[in-house]
Image 1: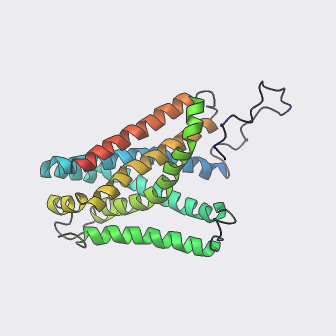
Image 2: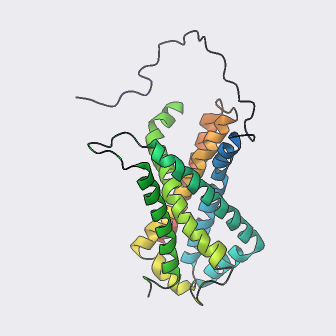
Length: 147
Length: 119
């Protein structure tokens, strides 16, 4: 019978003398060369955190009634709201393109008995679903599925 | 704390992965509506009227989508900021940073559940 291993199961009882050099930050980290895109990718976390709370505020306002909903819409239409949403739009597009480029490479050679589809097929599926979700939003907002 | 974080890692990675994949897709739709279509007047009159939006949001699928729109970006954001903190030499402070960031994501997710329940 198997059971999950303890996370520290292979840890030696006491720390050994290491012969490796202490870790050093690369010269170009964090904003030069290839590290720029890497750091910006992580920094999008700030935007995602803010947007999570923005959507929370809007949904909360929707539960509060028509006046609160209108106030939330007005705040989104303010210059600050538009700027925030603009930055967020650039961020999600950056994350989407970068992550979708990485996703097919991160697939295991086999998933159970089957092999994952070729990379171009995975790319196509990801972008199709992305476009489909955006299209779905537009259909809903323009009157589909509602009333 | 480190031990707890290691044990929770599969769950945190699941939420982080969903945040990047599903959260990004949903947020793009949300942003195109509220950042592009609405300010540019591309939506039909009354498209964002309270009654219409509430009707969609209050059904089970709408609630689930809105909860995903709230919670998943929070977990993506929290985990990415934690890795950024580690990259900037914050290994020793990682448990405290992780506790703070995941705590914020957890609080926001809980409030998100409450927000969709009261619709």
